[in-house]
Image (cartoon, rainbow, N blue to C red; front, side, top):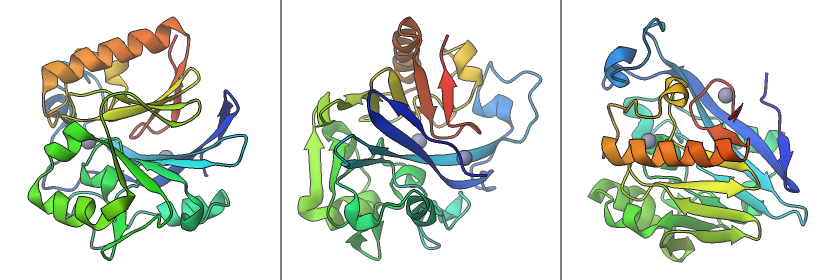
Length: 248
Ligand SMILES: [Zn+2]
Ligand SMILES: [Zn+2]
């Protein structure tokens, strides 16, 4: 059952469900180890959804937020359920890869950037790819090889907050990774991995085992959720079972 779209501030937001499954054995841990201090009474197994989002504004311009886990031979194959079905999901909402105007990669983890480049070429050949400078600067050599260098002149490096399209903003939100960014449209924030699991909604200080800087990640998460809550807004998450969560 595909996830349903919503419209916010004149922008239609389509959740694209790239994959559903548990983490592979290489990095899987019981939930209380993944989220120390949280998850009491939860089932031990974390079944993740892997969501990307397609935004389409009133003029028909499109922004893809994250590129999923990628094909069979993706770097994510060591731990995530491959191949992802982002291409099928895009086709379902009527958008060909050539028609994507901009791609925002929230961060360079392989389940968010794994579908950015396929067989050495940009998977969205007419898009600019928006990444934060701090994220690019911190990228490992294999990520530079697999993602950054093949993007060539399609790469648009930004510092801090920037307008992707009028009304669609990329905002620096570091901690999970050094240059993690989120996307805001109206009172909706697409959180990437600033929020990973619902347990972090009730207590934003609950950190995640694989946060690069857990303290900074917790501060970023608390500030973001406070801000969304003040507007009675909504978050769109990467890994919850339901894409959209109202923050009341
Ligand atoms: Zn899903
Ligand atoms: Zn991540």
